[in-house]
Length: 364
Image 1: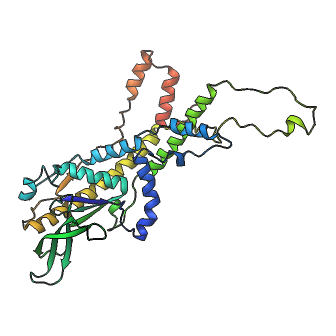
Image 2: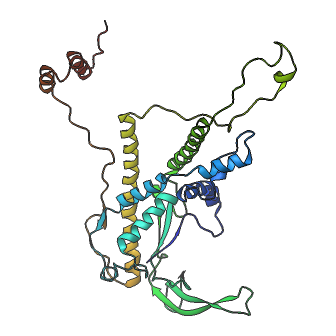
């Protein structure tokens, strides 16, 4: 079993994937901490010297909260367990890809690709050596009947070839009765094969905006820490059109000389954001269980084993709520006791009773 590719592929792109490429590049930049892309994210200010712009870009250090968030979500999806596995898969559970990867770790890596790129292609074939390739093809008729051909080839050096390499066939096997290629398209939101939506594109935009605002904030701190020359008085008689009145305006910093400020989020806003993320993870958990069931079907089709009969999904994924459970409200008697002990005032008690009854407080 091997994880073939994510939604971002170096091969010739389908038109639908080409339209998605700019968003994939944005997510990749955020995942790689804007490596080599900080200059494009921070535009040069009006009349800002090149040296000052370069210093400002070098001083801007992006945080890793985008990557940390996706790793956290993938870790939450990894809180799963399977009911029963085929005997051959159970025997190889500690090394499912020929590289010492445990089945749980393998699935978590696939989860991370889906959370980041929107989809991942998971193939169920024997592990590949770095220089050995296997080609799977379906045949409608042949010496062995309908099924799948699995061809194993090695890439060997060939000085006479224009590329310097040639393929050498090592083995070819036929699997009768297989009607589908042993690959599962694991996508977010249940997208069709070859399609997928970036589930955390909004988080990537927030990451980019946070990086720019943080850079502006650091630049503002740097400039306000230096002495600034101030010109006072009138250089020429009032109304004169010569001298200082015709001097060009003086710029003291980049074009963006403001800081994004907003009121802190309320508890309701935080709870709603957590509920949206929780719903997204719940949907992803359903897709993961469906993918794992298809994976077992392909595995048993190749090995010839019977698919284990189970009640319910083959993989159970448990997602813990992101928002903390609401605290129980105090009773009226408890609030009266607090007021009698002098812990809260009578005004606060009246306010609490008014909020409880939905009555606006009286004004003097």
